[in-house]
Image 1 (cartoon, helix red, strand yellow):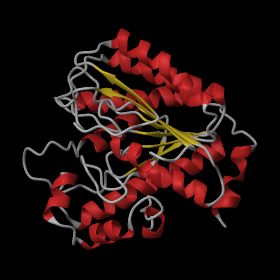
Image 2 (tube, one colour; image 1 turned 90 degrees about the horizontal axis):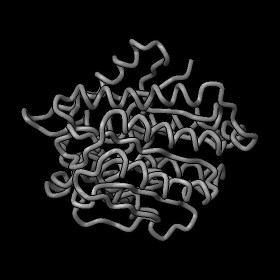
Image 3 (tube, one colour; image 1 turned 90 degrees about the vertical axis):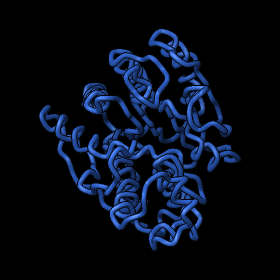
Image 4 (cartoon, one colour; image 1 turned 180 degrees about the horizontal axis):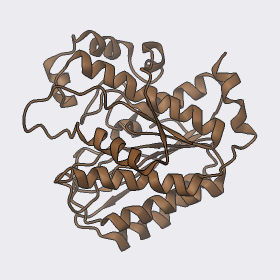
Length: 313
């Protein structure tokens, strides 16, 4: 039985009315548990040295110690607490563990991550550390890969990820997002597709089909998928008009192409802010159901089997 990693045991102390849907993650895990498709493990917090492969040490130490400026914390959008620190470290740890599974079994997933607004020297947009950037730098630091691709289909551009890898010709960043949505100062991804408000399923899937093959033509040795569901029509921060069925088809197309490509595939969740929030949890659950369906029986490539030995160096 494949496993998924979770961080919902770290419940952030947020003020009433805060936009961050902290309870969504437990809803997602409980929904999937009822399916009986997956085993679940609490994510192990990443160590600071690993985080610093993608982030400035001064930012990491300031976040961990609680000494960042009020302005820096406002940019993150979450109040500082010990729980925030542990959840941030565990979010990265979950993606690292999912990455290990991907190299051993062909794919791996975490019920969190996709924190793509975190920059090298600062967090932003509810994102403390950039888990995908850390995982890629970890793989490269250990000599496991050279080239990676990120498919970011959250409705908000992955600006932090784009900026971290802006001058890195060995990382392909694809972002399909809302043109008029946060962040309002976009960064330059390898390939950006900015969609108008109220884009529906047909136009969205057409844009996906036109661009997705370019990420695989890059010939990455690992593919990370940020699978945010905030493009739903019911999402209060989304501005697009996707249906649950459209998101299911989106995920099936991404994962089917990834499976045919045959290199390790890492699934992270990204954003979702529907009202009621159960709609986002259900949409996320559909993504992991599609992953189970597409990847069952997946066998890792010969290159994938070297992960465990290299990671122990």
